[in-house]
Image 1 (cartoon, rainbow, N blue to C red):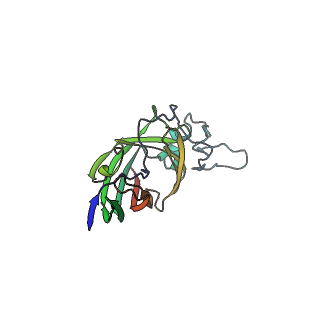
Image 2: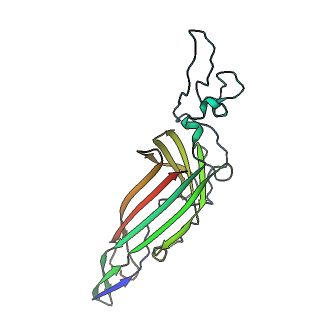
Image 3: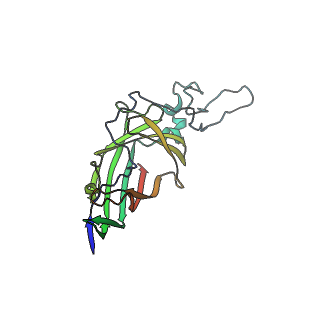
Length: 234
């Protein structure tokens, strides 16, 4: 005999919720982890005058024209001077439930754990105050829109209303993703690598184990959670 049930699944959602403690400072410019990219060169021989901005992230007006780094037109094509102001974010969760064993009134039965899907997206915008990541180059936040959600009923807590991420930009194809943990502390989450320097992904799969209260059979493998998180620079 087979029944269905919807036990609570205690898996970790791999996105950052807004409203945590976090840092409150504001960050601008690069940091020690940011690659330095040269966008120009000197003219003339040794000792000749510098006529272009040599380094677009050192805070110095190299060519003495009154414009330093990204304010100088010499840096208009420099990677550091074209970091995204907005990033589109999309999360997709698919849970495939297993058939587990339950003893009810002394009778062993098979119970099918429900499948579910949840899809959410937002346009993340750079923020400069509030829950800003103190060790990141830029922090982004946006309200989530759910286009599909059949997983909320399986959780013991609601899905977040917004997403909050920080990034350290290493170079065109590599950046570090930061997020707040359950205490609101910013932590480095993962190194992201992109083949095209435009779209960034986390793909994962995790077995979910739990002990549904209506089964009393101890912890069992409830199913598999597959996820795809995508950030696309705008």
